Length: 299
Ligand code: AMP
Image (cartoon, rainbow, N blue to C red; front, side, top):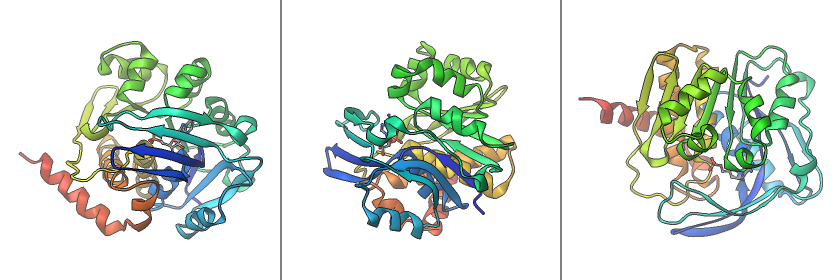
């Protein structure tokens, strides 16, 4: 039994930051999200890899208790090549090689179709919609995306957002998608489409949670050593939904706690390349930083 179903990419990432470089390392929105969710609940993934995908990475995911029965293999693995300059809040894409993702049709295995908590992580919005249609009655649907899909499939993305309970976006994407400089206006526009909550991630500056009548501002964690922010948004989303699936409490105060758990796991993720930090992270590291988040908010 899995309690969080994640639809997203499993990728090989080539990444360059001012602090180093990795080639064809383990990445992808579903990978980061599943790792992050696994600290709180049992995630299952629906995605596609290529026949070139290293066995070692499959072993790593299985070791974290991630169920991969919904992962197919065909052709070559999706490859993202990106870099960051000194402003590590903005990933720049050199190349997006969709490869097997191009022909991917989301098929949710029968045993996951009654999933309660569903994370439509960053992937083609048409596949987010297709996957969601196969799930009978989810309690919570969280959706994430990125500029690539805003640019290429805006209409389909808006249709997908209409079916989500919580929308995750970073600040740049929120401004781009809703054609406004104001994040408050962007959040209101998003809520008018259907979601009950919108979370706008602001990289190292924290995250904003908007619900109909309230908003909450989570601080950024003052990280001394940041190496690679790739996957921070996905780890945020994975920990967020993983914590909600564990506690089964969708009240606004508990959603605030989930935002902090998301921020804790995402801040750890930035400390190393690829999944390297999440691989060694423990629940006690998470609880320790959660307490620090409480302390830096006290006045
Ligand atoms: P994040 O830094 O959280 O926004 O996500 C980074 C991850 O997203 C990387 O591991 C990439 O493999 C993956 N990624 C990059 N471009 C796309 C895309 N167009 N669709 C889905 N996933 C992507």
